[in-house]
Image (cartoon, chains in turn orange, brown):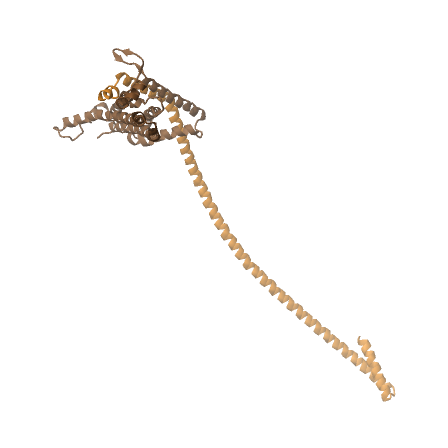
Length: 171
Length: 263
């Protein structure tokens, strides 16, 4: 049994060993000459491209971050500005409203005063006219009484007549 | 081996069958200066494997030329993963990042060749060339020569051979240390040779013996158990094929890297 193993399995054939050296050496050479160079160059090129793209992406990201920061600041500034404008507008609106109200009140007061004054004037004028009319009536009545002998009934009738005439005249 | 004879004396003939199964056959007899350089079954298989590796990688290289650096397809991804693995996990840690490119192709070829030789052996009717001691010796010798050349190129020939006796060693101890270091130069490739040979041989013997149990006990029913076990061992063998290729390349890179470094 051991002879079989010794002669078969553990026997080293120098020829086969040399063929192994030759075959493997040749394989190393042809793969080095025609294959690995191309593959490794392609890998290096892709690796360089990826690194370049990553660097480019990093730079782009930096720019984008800068822009984002800038936009954020602008947004914040615009927000603050808008808040200021809103508050200022609110204050201005209130002021305008108050002014309008004050003006309106003043105008209304003026109109009221003018109306009161006109009424007063008209009343005064009416009183004056009434007084004048009353004087005229009294004067006419007195004149008629003095010029005519009038009995009481006639006097009363005349009084009524003049009063009616006065009322008509007044209307 | 006669089948009838095997069936008559199964237990006596298992070693003969095994030897017959694993032994080499001369196909073309060649003799150069008294050295037997016959082309055998193992040599032919090595050529077929080498040719297959070259052809498939050459087609892939042409594809690389055509596609440039655009996105890789499946085969390109596979080879890139492989190259990346060999570079980052085997070559770079021991040879160094600066010099990895110059030596990467050697280790990639070594890994692929051993892996292909191991895996082809799992195909029925084929042979496992790495289960032959002469083949593993040849591969170990390549590592041995590569280690010496790399050491002498990296550190200079004088400095490299001077490292057999490290600085600071007492004079009396120097011969022993030198002898020890000198032996270790050969023991490393010897370990590579034996490890690959033994692992690939053992897997085949185990599968062979398990299947032979049916013949040995002359019971076909035994096949219900032995065949699934043989399948399981074959699956394990696939893993061992990859592992041994990795270990051989990994240890080669370590030895080469060690030769280039001062103590």
